[in-house]
Length: 268
Image 1 (cartoon, helix red, strand yellow):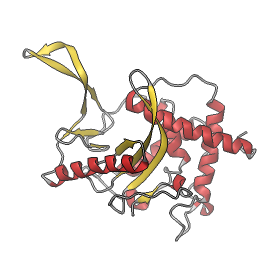
Image 2 (cartoon, rainbow, N blue to C red):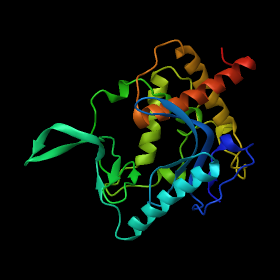
Image 3 (cartoon, rainbow, N blue to C red):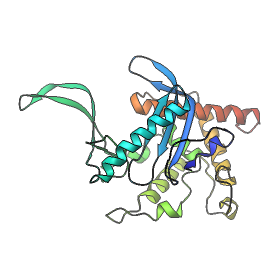
Image 4 (cartoon, rainbow, N blue to C red):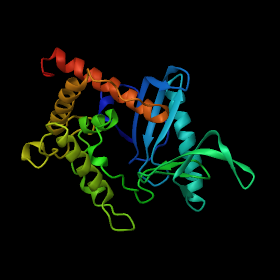
């Protein structure tokens, strides 16, 4: 059984495919997808394998079963590529259409080049983060938090994870720990009063149900929602494509949490 995100603790539906035990999964019945001309809702299933096959997978369908099957088909295809000599990575993601220029007499395809370390396999189109060295952006730490980053903070994912944070890449850098610490510092800089994960009351109890929210996660959720409520009246960031899709899903969850906390008198 894969690792199921805590927000599904009360959902009786469970994955049907043979996902690895360390694969993190989540799903939804009414996900919003932003197209180039319009938006639509669909069932979706998202998986985050930890075995090197893929970094992120998303399937869509009229039912959760169809969405999960779509995601698992992509995982199976990418696993075959991985087992047949490994992925061949590139920073550039191929887009539709061509640029208004030619190279050696041939049209130049449009691409989106990732500088954050994420890369795409040219054979099976798998995506993983942290594959290539990050190209630093000067002043990036001053960029406002995205809604997706706020959702990550709300879930308590900046608390150190001994297993993940001990993993090193070929250059000896602790990627997971650096990412968590950087996001935590940016959150504090922008005024989110995150709890101190070093305090005894915020240590995750041993043997706790993996679906259960502990005191640290609850405190993070309340701190982030309060921050979101303060920013709610400001103009929303422009977004599109896959970035816009993730931002929209994060906003929906933040708004739902804000309404729930408001009803409980905790959002002020």
